Image: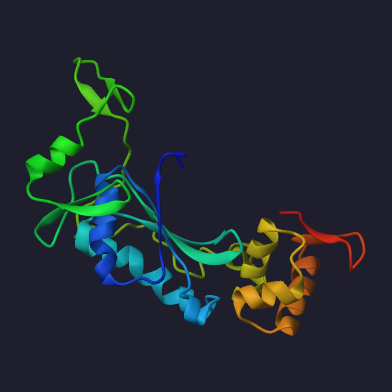
Length: 228
């Protein structure tokens, strides 16, 4: 993703975030990170499944945009990343246009006001063959009635399903943790994923047996090398 793309973090998903999604799409796209609230941190693995499945369909129905969802590690915290495409044409939600600008999602009084904010500059646009200035924006936008044919379920997006392996969801998230930091201990990974230490150790064992990770050095001073 473009380093200038918008990144916004929120503690939980709800339909009240749809204006924000609308504003980000109108601003050129970006990503929305859904992290845990401190009072029940860290985010439990099971809580990811429902938003993973429902967010894309909700955004498609309400805004006509095809977004993606993906569990990611942001620093030492497990997040659900919502990839929001740039809207090829201004998107409206609840009868109002929104635009994410200056770190805030602002309602626009009219389509004209929105277009004034979206006037491309030489830095973020180019001249087409007819001499018109066109913004450097790409998007994925379909009508609300059209469902994307390649939308994958939580299981279908998994490594285990792709390779037909007997792995748990925890195994996959432990692998994500190790890809972020191979020196993460079983104790720390258990705290991050809100599971028991013995569960993480079983994941280490399975991932090693399947050839995903390899132990380099001693148990005390070594680290896990991710092989694939």
